[in-house]
Length: 409
Ligand code: AMP
Ligand code: MG
Image (cartoon, rainbow, N blue to C red):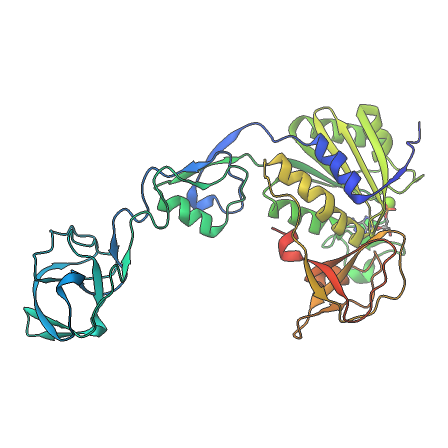
């Protein structure tokens, strides 16, 4: 067996190389707009109509001609009644039209007077108690969307509001990228599945398999179809066979554990027997070891076993890779500057991703234990501080905060 050489590289270089291997998956699905949330748009959506389709009233009130109302208190005959959803006749000169929110403005009218600024005189007359300005309370045709406009752009990730917008231009289905198919494996003889062994009967050295749960949840959150192969049997032939099978049916094979330099395990030689594997040392903390390779036509990624390393490496490397497979154009998470409400006196040679939480005073609190094995830090945190190599932090310093809400979407 040849032991792959581990090269130390920056996160940016690693990400650039990784994304260089990722191409948008072929195949477009037309999904119901009800199911579009979270999917990546595969084509621009162009509007075939104006939204709103006609000029319409923003208020319940009266449609009028401003040129006919020089003074307050002038009574006008009510010449028609226009509820939402009905068509309007041209406005009779010298009259007002009773109108309701969303109803079309009658031709000839150039303002709406809200009900609160009027006084009805019997059934047939209305007094306008405030002189209207031209165009008031009229929502213009096309002020939301113009006919022919690109409403949503290919590569955008659809949100609930975007689904509503697509429906607003008449689309009951939207073209989206197909879901990546991902095979998930855990490695490590110490791993035990919760539910199989109760806590009081755990053998010395055994730990529960936590990575499998958050990796599976993360993959599903990113819209993947996940095949969970569980814990890989501790045999070379079984591992090769599982990888071979997974490679035919999946776009990505993702494993956790067993990628530290020099470690003996079955994943590494098995991947190399079927395809290629590069072991990387990425200059980040947590999460140094990482493997990328190919098995047949499937990509292979090996995450570190330490839970926080595995979690953070997924968010920094696997997430953008999956987004690129889905054809998404926005891959880089947005960071914002926030004041640290903690001290971080020891600089590290590696770029650190500290688990922090926003506090009520508009700053960031640090989880006290930043060890890569302490998963509590990731469950407690609502974001990461991206701390560049060699940097110390003093209370009050502005730091780059990336919200987990940003990374988990
Ligand atoms: P490894 O990368 O395999 O050397 O594992 C590094 C550390 O992470 C060891 O302490 C492992 O026990 C732990 N670990 C590996 N896989 C998992 C997992 N699926 N769940 C929880 N801890 C794990
Ligand atoms: Mg291991």
